[in-house]
Length: 578
Image (cartoon, rainbow, N blue to C red; front, side, top):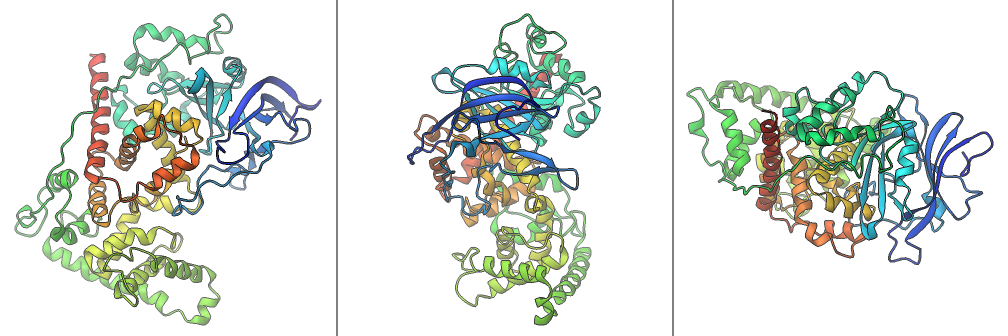
């Protein structure tokens, strides 16, 4: 691929004066790189390309997506999403990129464009943030001399940009020549009923943020926007060419959803009674009520050892005393059968089993640095460390495909601390991993999706904060990676984590409440971030320094207030339809 079109290529659009801001404030590099934005057809395939003005004639852009891999997925090549591969070291600042502007060049086939967001930040200049179907945001494009309108018009030849009902600046791209949109509906799990907008938004905010494709677009807009605004749809529709000069969609349509203020929320007291919640045979009489009480205030420490086994699926809520005794006996036998499997492997065997050897090395390394300030794991030759090691090794036998991944020791340590029991902590870990195992998959697709969901939630809640983060190359929220991976384990004190996790295990008031917790933390920092002189590195440093400084109860109140704010939006939508 060449940086400029050749005789065999077709130049569809070109605009000079489109800048990338590198945020390299502490280096000698210029923080703004001027360049060209183009739409070029190469071998009949349209692509959006940016290349710097310098060395324009001889340097080729880095290709973000170049070909399909063997399983039909996209091959991710050169683009760096912005976070360290080792999620645990988020205090490490982003390394300076190569001093050549060509390093920033990119090319993205328009078929791989997933979403586009337009924003205004400083000096009234527009910038665009584009995201690929792999979930990677491209560097923001700053139009110092205008031209977003013309670029979007040129893009309409190949893609349709469907606006979000929650954020009028956010658009989903899909091919202009797609006739049947049904598969896309199935993939996005769009609403069957517009009145359920906020519930689906909370469960799957990425999908629900977008207003749907052609068959449901008008329904959504009728439900959440004033009727007089609907006629603007034709401004960007290829079926209604020409005529209007306004920048399509962006200037004409404003967000029709008013979230309203966040309500005041109060927290309750920890659940401190248990026996009177059981019937004569030991069955839990009202498990949903217990979950509500746990969500509201957590669990008092003396009851955690028993209740956590219910919360994490070791014991069914409907089991009797005698049934739980039998479950414990069976599960104990099963655990030690698996433990014997790795304990009986000789050194010679292990030398020929690189996978098991790799798991053991990782576990031994992580065990020696997990919660060593906690008395249960402190000191040398601590039996707690031996239990931590043995349970993690046994989990490799239980789930050999996943095995051990860094971060799992952080999940196990509180379970072992509370249960004080090897077998029970193991089965609680399996229950916890049932909830979060996708976080540890090598592809990291689940983590990318959650970061994207978090970004879209935050954009609906606080567009100004998102504009600021976008302008500092931080819109991907890469600094939240560790939060979501191990459910804030390193952000709060050990005791606070026990409370936070049991709240999240209730799955109340929604499945993805941990995303609202992350939003609550970010919202609490908006005053420190907006209007400051922060760049990418200092934003990363500031977020890292929040560790152990956050007030859990305040964060939980904020997260629930966000949920109720969205819920009130749902109620207002229902009222507007009656």
